[in-house]
Picture (cartoon, rainbow, N blue to C red):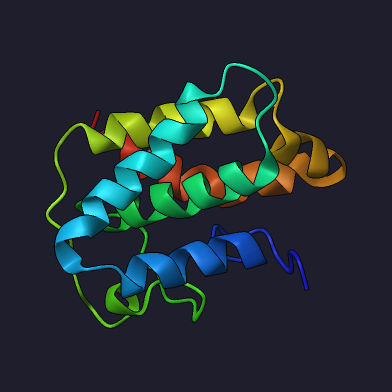
Length: 137
C-alpha cells in the first residue's frame, strides 16, 4: 500500500518500524529510538525516505511521552503506546528528535521530495510533534 495519509505512522515503513519497536525487549526500546533518530543525523548526503519515515515515527513516540504531547491512537503505532504504556526517556531525546525532523524536512531529503506536491500538509502533520519537542528543549 505504501503511504495512505500524512500522519507519522501512515506508511508501511513507519508501521513496520512500530511493530519492531513494540516487539523489542522493553529495556531496548529507548536504544532503538535513539539509533533511528541518529541514523538521520549521521547521513551527510541524500536522506532515504525509509530512514526518514522511521525517524518521524520515532519522533512521534518521543513527543507522545512528554507532558502535553500528542496522543498516539492509530493502529499502526506500537501497541504498548496505544495501550497506555510509557517509556522513561532521557532528556536529550527531545532535542535529538527535533534535529532529525529538521533534517528530514530540509534539503537532500527524499521524504521532502516525495511530498513536494503536498509539502505544506505533510509539514502540518508534523507540527504537533515539533511543538511538543520544541517546548521541552
